[in-house]
Length: 138
Length: 341
Image (tube, rainbow over all chains, first blue to last red):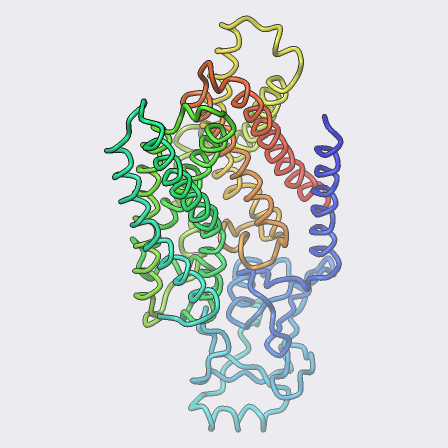
């Protein structure tokens, strides 16, 4: 093997390690259901019984994952669309309205910390109050 | 038409190569019809000057056209935010699907043929008597045909591309149990096809790289003519078999693992969304490595004769080294990702 060959190979190995480092330390985790980027204001976190956390880009994706894995789940945290606060799903108010948060999956469910915010949103975007989609049947 | 920097450059390159390619086709045909192996000195000099210009023009157009293949994917990626419902390039391919499919096939084909022609031209140019001039003109005619088809389709696609319809997400194609990338290997290898594919991926790649290094080594010179032929043919066969194995293994095993999405098999998400930032390098190295095996075949078939033997063998060694490097680098990058991600 020539010197050039070895140098090029070392460069490629370095590039691969940079790629790995980027994936591990720089990039925020993608949606655990469809792999798309997670917008902070619509983020949903599902905390599992083993304390690990799955992040989702929308309530739609989180619900799809929730349906198939409810036996693993401890609790669900949603983001208040007005203030960006993280709240437990059982404390949140949900509205299904005409406003789409993600055109890919047509998610129309919105989460709010305050009831008044939910009602205002429902009035503005022709929506209705909805039940917590993350309720677990005992 | 979607107007952005990618489409404008694509359209410019396609239009320029369409005009120059058309002229090149005409000039090559004219030159071939007037070709005489023995000519008077005055005619010969005129002929050489014309031939030099044609070949120079061909070199420039073909080098630019070869870059149109990766650029095409940059352009598709730039359409993603414009197309309603598209999450990755797969969504974009749902608009004008037959045109995109044709482009996705013809682009690697033209890259391969153009690369092959450039190598043949290099051999001819490096030999004082230019013994391959006529052969190169015939080959150039074929290359011009592919170039024109590619350029016309590029222009048609860029002008007709309108994001007027909503498309489906890649998950509806790549993540369903009846996806072709799972059904075909399953029909061949049975239920545990993913494991078998993974083993085959390493096996065929390692065999191919070993054969390429064998050709590069000094021991190669000690081989008899028959065993040399056997090694060369088996390398060509392994190179061809390796293509579907690598594609299916990527879709079924490597892509989900590297993207850290165990149920997502979309190769377009892998390529273009930056989830694995060096994914285009991995795929590019594999493509160039595989094409280089084919280019070696072209050189052996078209350029090995008594006059050009020395130049061809020197070039074969270089292409051989390029192929070995690209395939080894691609395999190493995948392995590093699989171990450390």
